[in-house]
Length: 150
Image (cartoon, rainbow, N blue to C red):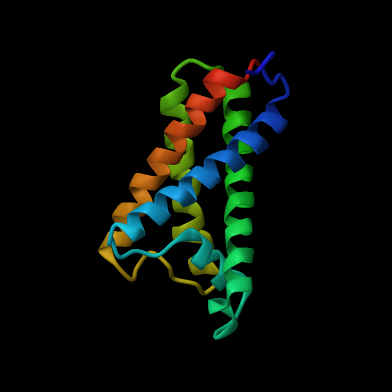
């Protein structure tokens, strides 16, 4: 049981964002295990840091998983900053919209600018990305609501 709530917005954003990233990756794993053909963020992140054929190794995939959780932590910090600046009213709407915006900027602007194209390969990947960004935003909003006080 938590005795007190996290009062530091940066630490809260980093920790909650990373936990949300872990849950997000677990959701992707469940969807893939259920037979939905899609790309995953840890595979995409492995492609950012490794060239073929190294990007397909276990070490690259683990690095990609760690990098995707770190990105989720940064996203959590951005959501925390948004909440600190604008207040906690409409918490879920703010978290879901910020999460979706950051996700789409990363995957549709930054990655293509780097010469990487991830979301264009499958319509399933596009819909899964949208769903999981919304899911991540809702999970993070729940944790901010429950475990923070700033």
